[in-house]
Length: 376
Image (cartoon, rainbow, N blue to C red; front, side):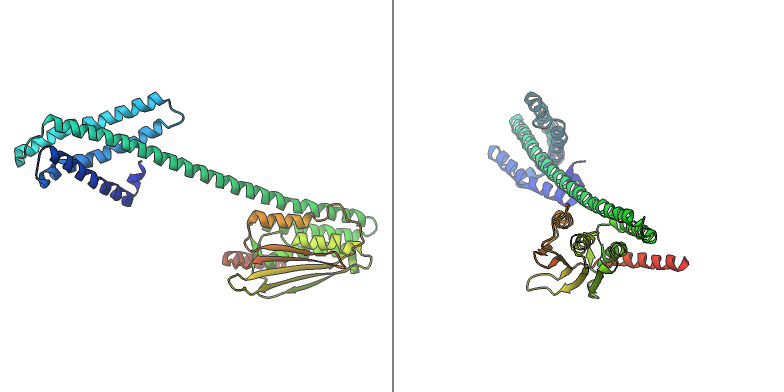
């Protein structure tokens, strides 16, 4: 269906645009033979209305003979036939309509030269319509190409996010398997605890990993599963301090964004110190500055040995988080790293978002887990 016929407002505007054309044709005929305005309107209005809908057929002709892929001679021949059809419409129906008006209203008959003039005008208006429809199709193609480009960008961004997210699980899995391998001979019970913790972590990852956003409370639960595994490995060498403000826990964050920061703190901080140390996780909502937005600020801090050699893979987790922020186009989001001394600190800032649906889903999942635990 023609686009004009699917929208009443556009259709009315299109019909209204033909009123000046009707007035112009009437003035042209009046120069040849003076006639009453009412008589000209009675003759021309039905014919112009009929032509207005007839020239819309150029839409399908233009779609069937697109520019750039159709030979020029075919385009010219096709539209010449369309213009001849529009002219013939007036040349046949016009005299018949005037003859009816002559018998019933007594108007002065039109001479053949008048109809030749009107036929030429109809052909010209068809060509104008064809040009307009080609412009409409070009604009439609441009919008379609732009939409496809945006869709491809979104698909590429989603693919990048999935790839970045997929990097996290194998990275952590390899470390956990190495820990199990080291414990299975000398500390089999601890190896079993690591296996159980690893299963819980992977189960939780599968549950929330498919969602675009989760609450900070859920994200910290993932980090806790990871830290429980590392607690078995490092024992008293690893201490964790959490300072989570009540208004920060319900905030919405991308999944698996904080866990790599915690993993980085343990792997490249605590693991390099014989005496171990404390990983501090802090989260609070910073009030909005003038003209800004509220920010969820998450800080992961750990002791570090500046003289320790750089391990293979150092910085992968931080780079992953930074690239995910870029891919998500998080407005006002930032990742700030402060290191080089005896303390290594990562400060992540995200705009505060409270998604009632996400929070409700998280609470429902928590209740289900509590109910399952009670049943067990």
